[in-house]
Image 1 (cartoon, rainbow, N blue to C red):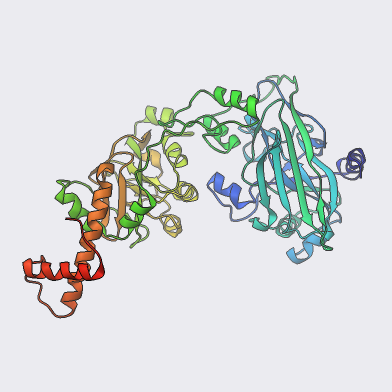
Image 2 (spheres, one colour):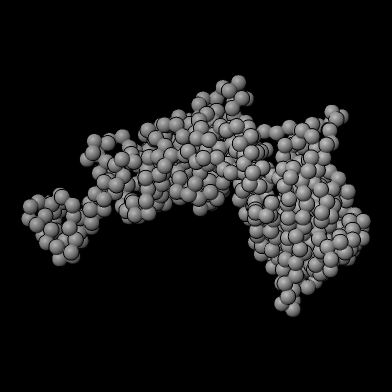
Length: 529
């Protein structure tokens, strides 16, 4: 079918016949990971039918609006009247599947909270098409959704990963409301949803394999972003943004042009704007986070030895004060090796918390900047009277691949945090929120935690005996000598198991040392002198 015919069919069959347009907030694990929360049940918002548009329609950005967000989605068009159906019967009530771009004006989200009425209800803000696919010929768990901006891919995911399968959404909604033929359900967007600017061309495509093995595709839903020229008069809310809004819209601090070593705003997004205009996508800010000295080989050596051994090796080098003490692990017995990143809290003061405690504060910036292998060390001054880590930020750290989180303050949501894969250490569990005792102040400064000084870039090793801090310049030699020490101690333990007394064996006298060296020679191993 020609594109013009597809548009006309969609206009006749769907746009003019749509009653309700229902959109799902979060439904893809990849998107939930970006947001740092996974909902237990689906949640929705309503959009007016006038928000729909067709392939080829322009997406207008009003004057004063900075962030026009674009989100590729699978749209379901109901084919039958549906009321209180079971998940097993729900899919049979869907008539068609098509592509959708659930675009929005992020600057207008703030007054309507989760309803998104103004931010996602503007005329023509949600194009769908270009072709309708027969739903009953498709596997609802076998659809692929992709989005491109100026030809560059930004989203690619499968409905096989959904938190809430399509049949569950239909059954859930139909418990309390009647879904009529022509009603549209926008089923959520995966990771990669971002911001588009005037001049950008946004494309979304949905495809799947039919029951006869043929691949069916909607074709690319293509829409260009333009300046609409619309001036929003001050009869109601006007555009307003925080840095947290920008990061949410772009998907990351780097993409929003807000990431710096100190976690502050780089340039208000101007550099990202220029880069985007040139290439169709914003370039991330330079990564000025502390460099890790850990190599895979060094990490493996450190994982193979205990912190007790490392403590001995540090003491031999005159380092007596490299222990983070007095903390309780959420995963007793966990072994972690990583590079220190730091976050410092200062004592709560109402005016400072009002200015620095809310929004995209230092705590959130620190967590958002974590990378695989990082260990976030929080300086809470040993204050136990409030939480300094909760389940959402712990989940965000886990999703980003961080090795662990350590705080000498309290841990809030201790049960959920303990259930996560990422290990954490804290002074105690405490239900109070951060602002009771702290202002999040700085990222990647030298801090004190559990009685130890920690410099960004230090290596942290933790196990059932505790946590040690190793200065980067000493890591290689400490790791090597620790391996040698534990090899020797394992041989000694074998001799003790054979019945030998420890006197003269531990530590070894000359006789036992000669026997040990002979053993090494037999094994073809030679310890460094």
